[in-house]
Structures are given as C-alpha cells and as structure tokens.
Image (cartoon, rainbow, N blue to C red; front, side):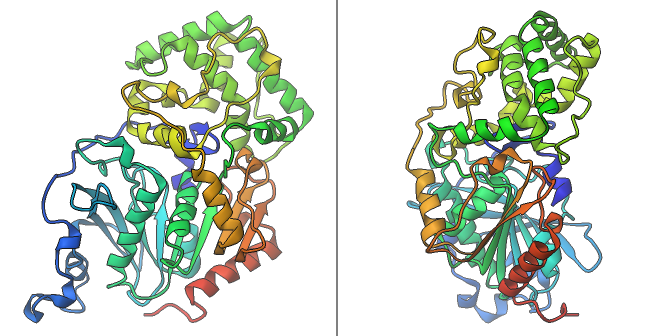
Length: 470
C-alpha cells in the first residue's frame, strides 16, 4: 500500500489526503442504458448464454452491469483487468439515472479471498499491479474501487446531494454482491486515510458484506466544532527543537518574509501556468499552507527528532521557498489540481469534518479569516451544508456494534489525534499503533507482538490457514 498512498501526501486536512498530481481527464459517464437492477441475473438466463466456467474474462463480463475494458500487465500469478460497473446515482431511487464506476481487478484464484480496496479518491494514478498489504498477507484477489464523483466515476449532470457516505457505501455493497457470484471465498475490505474511513462507513451500513476490515490512518472527527485534540497533538509531537523551528519558519513566512514568499509563489505559478482562482490569491494560498505546515510536516516524518532540514528564518530566499514547496506540495492548491478533487472537499464540508488549527503564535499576522474552512476549496456554485450527526453515528456504531475491525495508526501521525476507538459493544476489534511511523502506517511496521496478532486476525477472517490454491 505504501507506493500508492505516498502519492496522496501533498494536501492534508484532518488527515485526509488529496492527490497533488496532474489533473486526470474526467470523462462523462454514459447516461441511460439498462440499470443493473433491471438486468436478469446470470443464473436466470438461458444456459446457452452462460460462459464456460474456465473463461474468467467471460465470467466477469457476464456479471450484470459489469463491463471489461481491457486486460493489463499483472504480477506473476495474477491477471489484471480494467473494469467499469454501472451504479445508480441514487440508491434510494435506482431508476433515476446511473453512472459507470471504474474498477481495477487483480485476479489470483476464484477460491482465494477477495480484498475490497479503496483509496477514497480516483484510480488514475494507481498502478493496476498494486497490491494492498492485506491482499499480500492473505494472498488474495483484489478489487480496487474508484470513489463516486472522482475520476471518471462521476455522474453527468452532477447532483452533489448524492455524494454522501451512505451512497458510497451502497456502491460498495452492490459491487460486493455482484462479484460474490464469481468470488465466493471470504471478503476483506481495506483502505488508508480517507479510504480507511470509507472502509469503516461501508461496514457501518452493510456490516455483513465482508468478513473483516483493516483501516489505516483513518481519522474520526466526531465533533467538527472541536479541534483541540489536533492542537494538543501538535504541541507534543517531535522534539521541542523541531517544534520551535517550525514555529520560527511560520512566523517569518507570514511576517518579515511574507511579501518575498508571496512574490515567489506568484512567479512560480505564472511560470507553470497555474492559477489560484478557487482559493483566491497567492497570498491566501501562502497563509493557508503556512497554517497547515506543522500538520503536513509531521504526517510525513517517522523520526520525531528528525527536523528534516527545517531552514532558519533568515535562510536564503530560494532555499527557504524550495523547502516549503517540497513539504507542502504547493501544486495541490492550484486550480488545475483542486478541480479533480472537489468531491473530497465537498465531503469534508458536508459530513467528514475538517481541522482549523489554532495559531496563537501567529497573532497579528493573519489576514484572511476563515481561510481553513472548506468553502475555501469548493467553488461557490456548489452548496455546502454540514451534517453534524453523520460522524457521531459512525463512531457509535464502531463502539457499540463494530466487529472484525483492525485500525492501524502511526505514532507520529496527526491523524491519530482523533482516532477510532473500540467500546463495550465491539467484538474482535483492535486498535494498533505503529511506533516511529507517520501517515503511512502498516501492519508490517507494528511492534512484533502486535504485528503477529493483527496478521493472525486478518488471516483468520479470510480463512487462509491453508496454502494458496494452485
């Protein structure tokens, strides 16, 4: 999972990641057509129309609503397919429009477990041969799902009110039911950061779809009005010397070096053809990224005594700017890169919640009130109305009813400031902390005893005590 999740590190809000890479082209999903619910299941079709049992491609294509786009190069022992699956825009009213959801399938064997993987965003930059850690542990198949309203999985026209955690969970539910006709062994679900959150949300609404779930680095913001947990974490993480160095850089960039840094940012954007129409100006982007700097910095650090070459406030302007650009991944704040992930900020601003970091050390230096609000990232034409009950509902389910769950966090990751916790009603649910680890936490990075326990639980859920089938 490391390589795919590393590409998602540039823009961090509440531990949620947005790709700071070239904007993917967003192709319109074809409207109309027969909805999967209206297509008779394969078992009810005439026998002559059913594919031979050993023809994998034909078996996948025979799943109602599924379309095979192409076969990709795959790791040894696997086959890899690009697929799309037709989903209703509104699962409550499936007859009112549909869209094609992009998928990537890694096939090992129909008798091996299946891992449902989501990164919470699009599949544009995920290697078709990528295998998540649980997939490797159980030696299983893997179906990677592009989240609705990301990449090419976007309904046209776009009704933003149909982007919520339950609709996305229902996408996963329908897909699991459809593919269980081919993959009948145990199913496991997993994801990291925003994808880990989506994994939990799917389980909350459809707890019996899979035998177990692994959520990595998944924040749990139950009260969007209270960000004191993140503030406390950032006051304690790392060494006092590193924290003081970050504070000094923040004060310089919004104080004596502000005009110089905003000018460099303006020239850099112009040189690359970037614009800041959504956020508003280079100065606004500078203030926003400086405010987020401590969170961004520690989400990328493993050693708490590693100051990562934080420059002095008096450093050469080019060196100071280059370091800052490298840490904050400035392209992620430009219009070109914000547009493909508008759906992410919409979700933050309507259900998932976000962080507004306290900044008493920057008193008198801030010019843009509310710059950390999600409205900063979302075009004004898209309505944002926050639903405060959504996340507390998820939290209650985990503590009162959640079962077969693994939560893995990195010790130095601000995302663990507000973690998922088990409760009296949780069954076979566990929270693990990987020492000296950042936002890219994994089972492999756990202490030996925890690693053995987590691996054993995952293999037990997947029922893979026996060796892989030939």
